[in-house]
Every structure is written in C-alpha cells, then in structure tokens.
Length: 133
Image (cartoon, rainbow, N blue to C red; front, side):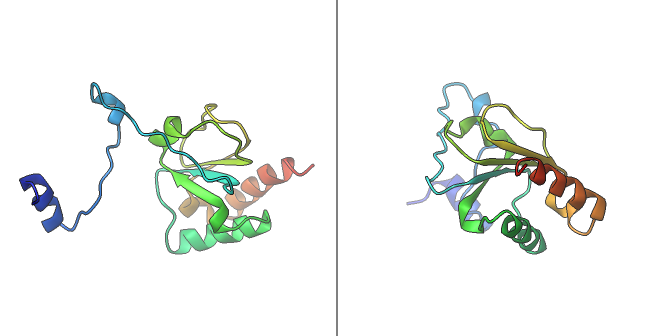
C-alpha cells in the first residue's frame, strides 16, 4: 500500500528521487558511493550527460582510450559521499574541483559549453595532454 506522498509522486511520474543536501537533515545518514573496480574516471557535473553531450563525452573518452562503461557520474554535492579509492581520472565539468579524491584532475565548463567551442575543446585537450607527458 502506498502512502499519500508516495502515491502523489507516482501520479506525477516520479518513481525515484534524491535529496540534494541530505547532510542538512539532522540524524540523516548519507549513503557512501562505492565505485566499481573497473571505473577509471569520475565525472563530477551538475548535469548528467545525455544526447549530444553524451556523444561528445564518448568522443573525448575515446581519445583517452576509455569507454563510457569505465566512467561514473556524480553530482557536485555527492563528491564527499564517494569512497576514497584509486580513480585514475577526475573530471569536474561546470563545477569547482575538490581535493577529496586523488587522481588526474580535469577542470572544464559544462560539456554543453565545450562541444562546438574550439577554444574550450583545445583547453580541455591541453589538460589531458599534460598527464601523458
């Protein structure tokens, strides 16, 4: 049996939701995010890449010899929930970087702002190349 609030969310087509700032609730335990062992890159961005942004991301990853299956996305407010473990790449797109996790750090505007902007693409590529030298 659904509660009134659950039924109301269901009627609106919302089957899952996530609190943006669970740490603000007293006594709330924030679940840790464990990355799979095959995860090579953590993409931290306020937007989840979809459509043309996902295609652009896939092209960038291909140039780095990575696949979409080897990356995970988290929202900026979730970075502190990620268990500190070895991730090769951290890409902060459209948000400030954090020193919570260790790895090769890329910092850029949102993917939508890079795709089609040669100056931004060049800046991103230069960051990637600094780690291959």
